[in-house]
Image (cartoon, rainbow, N blue to C red; front, side, top):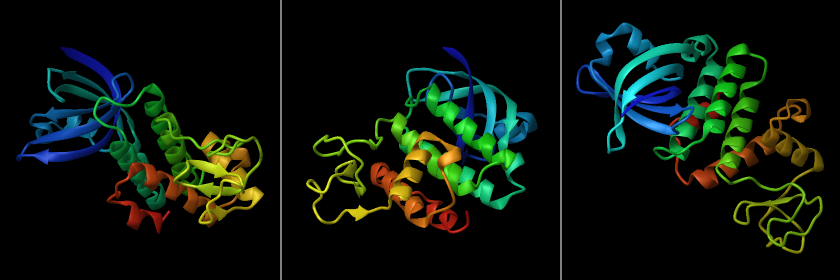
Length: 238
């Protein structure tokens, strides 16, 4: 079956001297993997298949997981636009790796694609601080996958209230009665910032707070349940 779809290249790796394999988050078919024959010898297709490029792909899909690329045309060269700003480029690499690790093949809805597209565009326009884009993207990507901490109820008992202790194991904010003693307590302003990042509310996201940034990172790492290759280096530089 021949499929045409637009997508963002999350990762690529070589296959022999001239071929390659692409991991692509598409708009309509989730995350896919495509084998690209002689990709290194076709300059236009090679550019369209570069990591962080948003491109239109035409590929053959059989019974297996691996498709076969027929053609690719570049729509948005995010990699090129971001390469001139080191923190923004590193941030985009971290977001691409997060999406690649979180989503299995054929997983991901249009919302995931639009979220990554919007985050890359925000970094390319330099309108938001890179750390803020990364934290919000990761929290919202997890929320789309079903892991979103509620802000107005206890994650354990469901009681309504404005609680300020957070439990990774229980899945969100917990009341004093349900707290088991190891949960960290946050300020009201810190909880508000975390919730703003979760919603992509830039007006209320405020200035950089290491405690909030750390909470967002812990939440993502807990549900990814695996290490990101680029995280240790990138987190120190954005």
